[in-house]
Image (cartoon, rainbow, N blue to C red; front, top):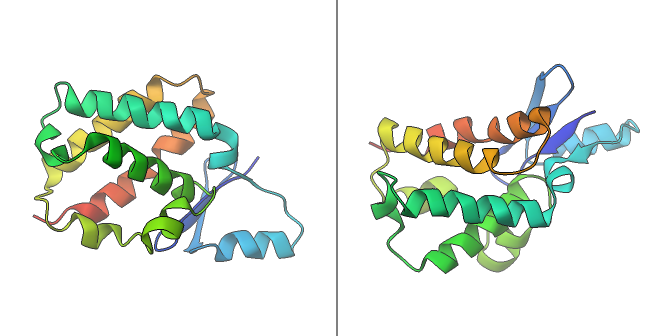
Length: 159
């Protein structure tokens, strides 16, 4: 099976059973595979909207309760969760919810006002891993989901 993940501004990632990846900008990889008749399943479709909502809830539960980066989320946490769900839906190959409401994600630019260093990145990834582990996912699917985040998290480091 192959999984596709990607959003405008982030590379698409196609993962096979071996865990190999193929990257390309935006949805070009997806389009190329469609033209060749290769059917792919997105991570969004595999995980589903309900599980993604649970992921966002669990993630922010870990962030708010005991995380060293909770101070970065001092605005309306419900709005933050809504935006995260919309972005992740899009990022994982689902509907373009974030772009439809807020425009291009421009995630690095949106995160520049916040001091994000290596320890902040690592804490964010730790909370995301813990949140993924709360879901009832096959190991391969949980790993594929987690592996979408380290490169993006590194891109947010600005200090």
